[in-house]
Image 1 (tube, helix red, strand yellow):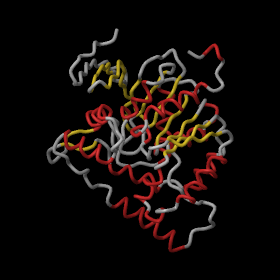
Image 2 (spheres, helix red, strand yellow):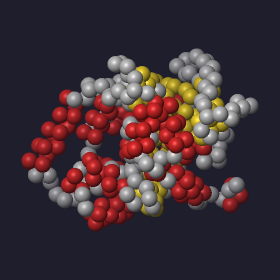
Image 3 (cartoon, one colour):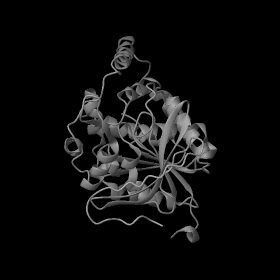
Image 4 (cartoon, helix red, strand yellow):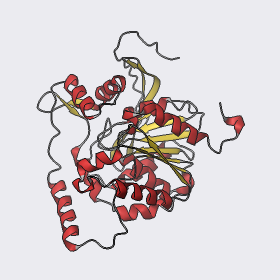
Length: 344
């Protein structure tokens, strides 16, 4: 039976702890300014000496689906996608170093992929659909390549990384040296504590300023479940800055090789403003629209069976900017290939 939703904008969390081995279950019902998650179960398990938290949205009798968020995000930011998929048993993972999962301090791509493998085995999921945004897309793509028989479909939400031409020949020594030094500098500064914020009001202001299309209801959800007390007072986003080291633990060339191994149908979704995100991080990409589009087209052809949709008025944070468009396209993709009798 679902917990009744109250009328005023607030959040109610009813916590029931059941210690069965290393599992902690939490039954939750909440209503944040009308953005309702009727019922979900939060649980945890251990992978590679790191306790990982995930959210189970129920419907265990339905086909399995796993959602992987991007860097500096957390599982409940993907709630809009999760609650639009009533015909699936949806599980959303807090990646290591994010949300309510532990921060082990060291983050490599192979660890993130191993965590997904451990989640699937722990929850006894059967050939789940994988949906990954940004970093989550990198992880999901690698898992689908390494374990092709264990994934039924793959959805990449701007999850292929920046536009990089890996066919341009060997890197010049100076360019390679600069990239390696950048990686070393990144690692040496990883211990820096995240910036503190006075309270959730300031967190909301920062979040909506950086994501002007984000709905207030979802923004409040992200802040409520994505912040924690700061050591010096106030609050901070609950993700470990050390996660940035992951970008120096794998190569784009290897990634493109692995995409060719994926056997399941693939849905690629990008926003028509996605290049702006990458330009902010790599100034050399400014005004490189033709390069960006050509690399997207080349990447799509690497997959054995892929389709690509571009969402108008959306940037890198697709699920923030145009949630309804994302949900419609994802739902239509998941219906493809299903017998008519299985469709609601």
